[in-house]
Amino acid sequence: MRSDPLRAAPRRGQRGAGIRNTFPMTSLLVFPTEFPIKVMGRARAGFAQLVHDIVRKHAPDYDGATMELRPSSAGNYLSVTCVIRATSRDQIDALYRDLSGHPDVTMVL
Image (cartoon, rainbow, N blue to C red; front, side, top):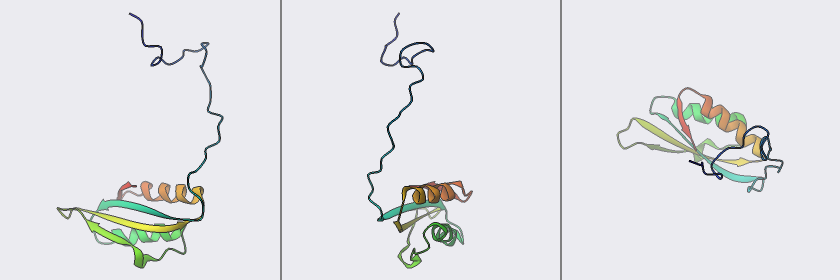
């Protein structure tokens, strides 16, 4: 039985093996821009402050008064939305890395 050639990965020595994407990664965002970030974690004392502190580290001009908090229906989780004025893709990437790397953060969107 033959495998589907469109699904089969090229083997070493075959055409297409080792081809790298040489196109530069482009962004659809034009900087500076308003950029929303939603962070979810267990609803516990200090979670919103933790998110605020990490966001301020990467966006010093962030106004914490604009933070939106939404508890889950059962009250076990908290969703924190922050809108920052992003100045670069690197800034957004670093912020996502710090937030998603924190043990109290469940998800970052």
